[in-house]
Image 1: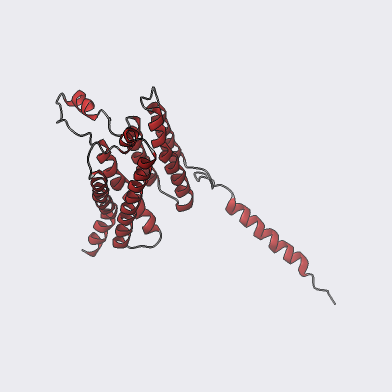
Image 2: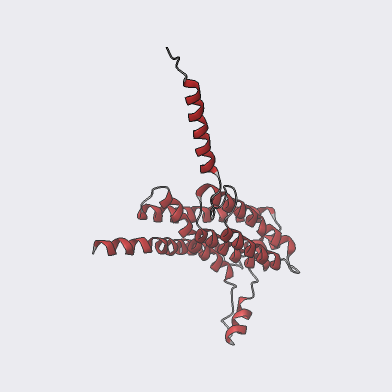
Length: 240
């Protein structure tokens, strides 16, 4: 009578399972191993790093510029985490870096003194109307316009529909914008009046915070709409 020998079969099955798992875990050609940024993301990050480095060439207000860039460091850490955890696409990654580029340019001249009027005159030969420096308004508008599409991608990836993702993206932009204004207020309380004015960039406008938040809201509404537009047009085309 032959005795059963299950052990060899069990060992063979275990070994086969391990081989299949090893093949699945092995990096494939054209795929980026886990924990590493794809080539496109690395190039975008390198370009941004070069822009930041150039912005530090002979800084006029090094202390204030460094204070502004404390937020840049936090934003980059959040971006890398989001890329790893949420698998941000290259387009979303670049949109975040574009906003940080606006912030970097503004930080170089502590927001209130960005010489965009001179740049415009050099390009067109015309002199724009003077008055308040509005570059900070552009950054707040860009915050909503550039980051809302990223948030739409995140919420759509988590199962939200177009309308819900639009609303969630706008809500995040408005709430974080309000938190930033509170942060600026807290910084102003800890600084001397002149230093607080230079950092906050109010330029004598008592409604500066409200206008900044309104522009961020407008940018978010436009950006979230633009992010949903391709799928909306595609779905309407399929219905016809």
